[in-house]
Amino acid sequence: MGFWSFKDAADVLDIAESSVRRWVVSLENAGYKFERNEKRRKLTDEDMLALLRLKLLSQKMTLEEACIQVMVIEPSKGMIVSEEKEYDLIFKRFEEELFRLDVSIFWQGNKDSIGKIKDLWVQLKERRN
Image (tube, rainbow, N blue to C red; front, side, top):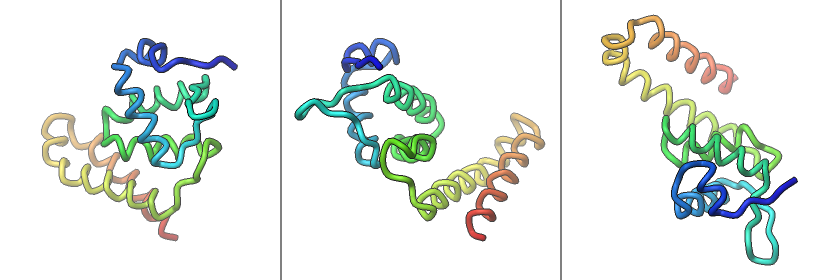
């Protein structure tokens, strides 16, 4: 297992080093655990995958939501997201899709838009039961 510097991580992810630092803090605030050498964080290969997921997810949702989603994907790296928090996240995505439905239907046709809402609705119902 290799360790990555923040500069190397920034180069690979094609973002500013300050963004890597901000994302690491955001992930920690969501419960993600980074290895440390005294007070310094060490970025592992697994952490790099989490940061890549965060980069991709943050293009579709807020940074906070993306951090929660990374924690759902990587529960071994810290806290397991509570069902209530995960439900709130799904509900928010459902609500956003619902309010964008008219624009989505206009631009994408109704199949994809309605399918997304149905999928989110099923997830919400499963979480409630």
